[in-house]
Length: 252
Image 1 (tube, one colour):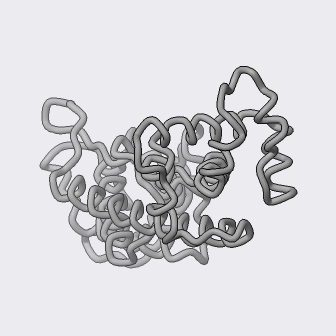
Image 2 (tube, helix red, strand yellow; image 1 turned 180 degrees about the vertical axis):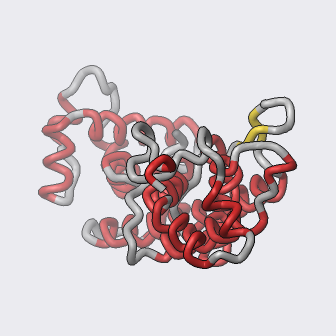
């Protein structure tokens, strides 16, 4: 069996690309010992593929590890060398497809780049299987919904500290476009100035004197006070990690 071990590449994995696929053939013929040896030897490869698909480290106790190992066993069973193509590439595709199915069922939140799911067609061109692309699209849409919901919860908690509710935002926004843009300009100025931002978050109020005195702003104190809550809400949004909400409230 020593000749089956590769010296470079996947550490501890047989080099089935350059040597006769002895273990694979025996496993497909029903040799359980060969099948178990193949899975054991290629466990590092399977974990690497799972980690690439998940975008994070995957440990032995993770659900993704179990899904990936079961998928590798499936690849052993259904791979047909006469159809051409590398066994490892085939196994990688099966693992990633099964992980996509897993994420779709779980409604998980980790994004899988489409490039990680590419396989090669008969002419060697990169392609994403239609069913895989559809699963990823569904998964990413659900991910965005969940992230937006989480952002709203966090944003609401911060706004409450300023005496503002999330439901107030629509009513707080100035009715005229010019007035809204002016209020947003003030909020952006606060977010861009570390001292003003620190004052806002520390005192739960606007640095009115500094804003009024800054000639570059060109906004009266009366205008700032009239739109105080809206300016605070937008500034808080810009200062926090609310990527999905910024487009809706701040107009970024």
